[in-house]
Each structure stands twice: as C-alpha cells, then as structure tokens.
Length: 346
Image (cartoon, rainbow, N blue to C red; front, side, top):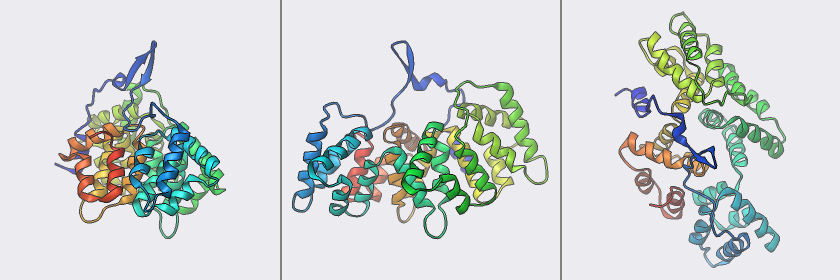
C-alpha cells in the first residue's frame, strides 16, 4: 500500500458532521474526546499542599506530582500555580525545575503552561539556534483554530516581545513563508457546511494550477488549502479524484519539492483527519532507533484535553498496536508513567 493510501484509508468519506456533537439543553455542543478532564473534587489549596510536600520529600515524590498534575485540567493547574506561589513565596515552576530532571521535567513544565503559552514556546523552540524545525511550525498552525492562533500570537508577543509573523519571516523563505503567513492570518473558514459547487471549482482550479501545466501555481494551492474549512477541503479532495488520475496528496508529491511540499501535504492530512495526523506524528516519533521525546510530549500534552481518545483509536487502526504499547516499549521510569497517565485510564 502506498504511503498516501495508508494514511487516507481510515477516513470515512460520508461521515456526518453531527457525529462529533451532542445536544445539551437544545443546543449542539462538541463531544469531549480528551483524556484529561476537570477533576470533580478539586481543591487548589489541597493540591498545592500535596505538591509542596512531594517536592520537599527527600528524593522527591514524583508519583504524587504526576498524580496531581495529570488528573487536573489546564485551568485547574493554573489555579494550583497561583495558590502554591501565594502560600510558599516561590513559583511552582521554579520549585519543580529544581526538583525534577530530563523528560519528566519537560512534560511537567509543559502541563503547567496554558495551551497558548505552550504553543508559543514550541514555536519559539522550533526557530531557535541553527536551522528551523519546519514540521513543528506547520503542525501547530495547521491544527489550531482561528481563535487559538490569535491567542498564540498575543501570548508570543507578550512573552518574547516580538511579533510571531516577524519571527517567521526572518526564519523561513519563499513559498513556505507565504503559507505560514496565510495560516497566521487566522481567517480560515470554520463553517461545517459544505458548498459542492465551490468544491468542484476548487478541484478544477487545483488541477489547472498543478498537473495540467508546466510549473505549479503554488500561491493558488496555498490560498485554497489555508482558507477553506476542513469539511470543505475533504469534499474538494474527493472531487479532485474526478478530474485527475491521482489523489491531491500524490499530485502535491509529484509537483512540489522541499518545505512547501511537506507543508501543504500536512495541511491536507490535517484537514482530512486531525486524529490520524497526530497518530502518524506519534508513530514516527517512536519508529526505528531512538525516540523524538519533544514530539511525544508536544502531541500528548496539546491533545490531552481535545481529542487524544480519537488519536489513540486512529493509532490502533493505522498501526495495529495501541499507543500505550509503543510508549511502554520506547520510554521508561516516571517519564513513561506520566505519558501513560496522559493517555487516560488503561
């Protein structure tokens, strides 16, 4: 099976958009597919006291730290941080930095940031030093909502005293920069309704701009792929099959090279199935020799209150093994334990 067919085979084309919603008091509400939910018997002062005791214990009680932080929502963790500093005079982050080590420390510190702070931090890390981690830039910007991107930009400016757009322009070039700028506008259509006529027009336009001419009109690809909603793009991808002998991802693979090819293919994957997109990220992070700890932490933390249950379902379907099995094979100690806890009850 080809690389593209293996990725796209799991998505049901005629999935009903209402599958991911439930009705509460007569109004549609998104279903919850996260693995970390607000703790029902929450007490910020009690949790802060437990953490203080765990940190001050000789040798540090990592089990308590993990148990408290993983079983609280991000909003609850922010309250714990406030209470901890008020009662001890020391920021919780500083206390944990001096108590923990290595990947466990990285995971705990990630859990203590707000989602926007964590994304901003990841974007900053991806552009620090020699070279840029283009995959991380695309992963974050392609998978976040307009509102989330606006919040990331606000937090980035606040934390690093620089506009995120300016950083991207200084660290990237060419068509890849244009694609990042388009995503950073945060003006993507987020309507779940699908316009069939628009899908047909877009499919023809993409074919005309790529396969049917010498050279590729990359700007048109960027414009369509970064401005349409995910359901709209899925219909366009289906329509593309009626005007071309190959799938749109395959066409991108044939027509483009380098960063912009990887970027647009990731945008397509994300629109087609966000859970499958992240399942593949996790699989690649643990495939072969060595493990990309940054990817494991980034994906598990960022999806834990969104759709990690769906990501794990896709993982099992795509690779025939559970995510937890591969985490057990690739990690160890308290770091392994916190990742498994993020995956929810098992």
